[in-house]
Image (cartoon, rainbow, N blue to C red; front, side, top):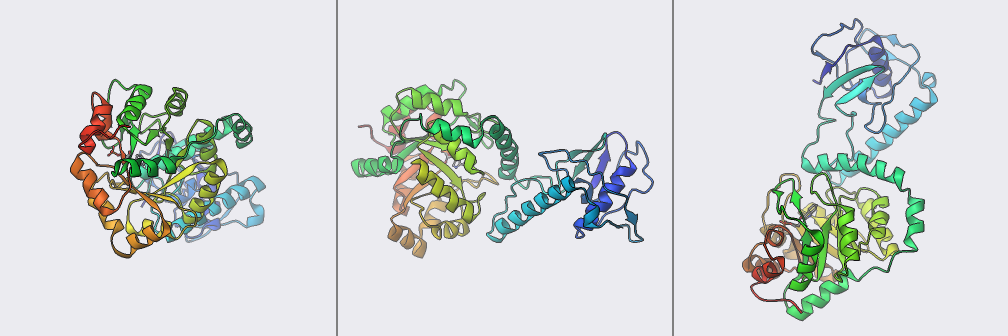
Length: 411
Ligand SMILES: O=P(O)(O)OC[C@@H](O)[C@@H](O)c1c[nH]c2ccccc12
């Protein structure tokens, strides 16, 4: 049962909106607040009042009067719903449909809260309503919900049309995949994608005196084939400014933009900011989105690193055309649990066979600290590794690379 905390007071409008919502989405049961009691500290009212209030807009449904029924629901015909509200209802339905498609592919992460934010408004009144529809199931879902809002705002400032114009002025991309292959054949060891990472939700701040350009240069000196730059600000203390600064500082390694991509707009933005590759997370993106985004990457000259964490995600990704680079994350982004045997598990048997047949390069990601760890994932079949923490924490990240591989891998 959901609980609603009226922060100020309540109103009959609540009941009206709730009633209308119930008729449109009858699967919700709820109570009408026929006799709202002002300043009552807490009372119970299930979902419907918020189903029209998405986090993107405070929608105040002004529904035509409704007829209360005995079972506490109410009737309103579709034709009595004002046009603007009808559109919001359709939008809500499309979003639920997308969530259903994602869920059918085993994706647990919902793109946005299904019942609006906990804090919402009905007319001039504020409500706090916590329920499973607006409480993230884990940190990854929290990040995605925040990202959805962030991207909406960024898109307003820099619409796609503007980004497309800016594209004509950006230098060509560098060959990310080529750099990995070259490094692997030069050293006989997995190619290194070294990550410029200040902090993470699981490990906190990794390095206080964080100079992204200095760290990037040290990585390049130490023999990294490519770099990964975190651009998420809120959870990883990264930025697109870091990506741009590294790109403009004369660093030659191809750059991976480490973002939580949920919309194609972000790929264009990354390209404008100097990325050569971008991360696509299978735990977040349905198959069609991945396929579509890979096409956009190709159009823009970017390499897509498609990240998986379990067998189901790996199987989904192996069924998508055009995938050339797969990352196996040893960290569960939902629980933060790290286990490097995950790389081995996902490369065993038939799956490994299919990957080799398709000529896909696999990157072992996260939790790699020692030459033994590198040897272990190489043995499992990876030709590249993505390493952040163990390098960024070193006083001299260049020396950190020789420590990690057990030998000097610089050119
Ligand atoms: O710092 P580590 O354990 O070496 O991990 C690096 C990298 O794999 C990790 O940062 C990462 C992998 N996939 C991600 C997706 C989003 C954010 C971060 C990540």
